[in-house]
Image (cartoon, rainbow, N blue to C red; front, side, top):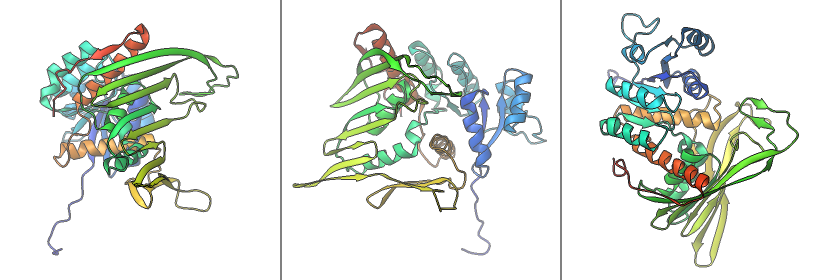
Length: 379
């Protein structure tokens, strides 16, 4: 490199957040832990009292309106407005569509928390209003989790042949639909859904707010569903209430293909006419026992091939936070024209459409068939 050649240092992705609830904090926290990559310029809260709490707890300025956020009218912004490149909407379901519309009207890209609208009519109306702008992405973070990135890398390499089925007992509704479609490489065509709900006793020792101290099992709802995506591809959905937090119900992910399958971290495949092998996706984790490098995921690999490498080593992020960081990074690359959109509104609409179909079928006991919607062929 010549002495006078300029070294370009990537600028952090600057974003604002509408909302100050539990999910909003994930984005602010990632920015705080990775200031060289992300910068949260402000948060919209409904009241000054809530704003004061957010400023003290999260260390970011707050405003009361979306207009103030997108124009950079933030406390301490100085002479130059501190405008966000991107706005994350982490708002209640009924509020999200109007927030998205207002941000798009200001010509600012949006990363809308899931789901982008509460019901099918809301999805259709939102798509009609903002879909053609190409400004809206959806904050579906599940496919960005390291373990799912690793599984997708195995599928993409053709290791298990043509992917035909995903079985997911991990997360719920639109999250599960999005993950399954991602692993299958499925589009947004018609789907046939058959679901049934069951109730059985289950102890819930841990919930979002912490350990419960409960010692007795309580009636707990479980939903089983099949989704026929056509072309021989299907999804088996299995979710129990509070499965995200309850340690008595573990995650289970299966990806079946024409020449093998992935069951959680085990990859079974045919290697020649007389040989079938099973290998494990291995997790390299720093900070265990005498490793003094700090607790951090380093990489995921199979048979000596790295499937996923953590680009945020040093931040000590949990997998869910890593997924948020990857989503923000991918959004930044999209904003700057360096990468395709990470999770377009069309996908967010499709995944929630399927989640709503699962709920309807479980509630009514009848088969539900979704049609190809207006967003089916969107780029």
